[in-house]
Length: 112
Length: 112
Image (cartoon, rainbow over all chains, first blue to last red; front, top):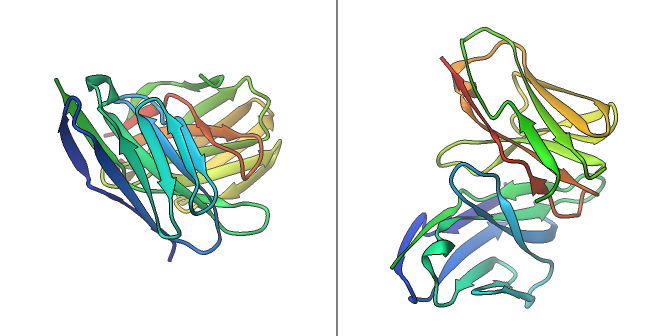
């Protein structure tokens, strides 16, 4: 069964304390891996797409990497405004529709 | 922000009543999706549409129906709401099945 697991469920960091969020997946036919940020009461906001093992994408303090079994979202010197829930989603399958499977998310809190 | 609006943003209803949620886009994207988000679960696909009058089921479609009579509008109907359908509902759009999905702001539905 296709599955996406994110860890940890929640993470508390001090401002400036770098860390990584993990997204591990078991799917057949990976087409792409997506990272989203979700603030309370809002819809997910797109961050990155990764398509193949070894690929990396960066945006400000965030860097996403991909291997054959997992993806990491590295947060360097985080600020309080980076506090949010980070969602990972894997697009899998073949043919006309490729379903998007979401993990449950990691809630990140960055304290001054 | 992608041009996606959802209405209503909040709704409280009683068990057994019909409910319709609306998603409106101004991006002219072909694909539209309805998800629900519940604590401890990732976003789960209810139904999706790949064109006007073309729809298909997702993983949690029981108790829901959809309609798309115009490119810009995708309606989600709960024919007879149940308490298990209390959730936050998100609409998403994409240009093709492999492209990034962009999400609306969500509708919080409470069924008493």
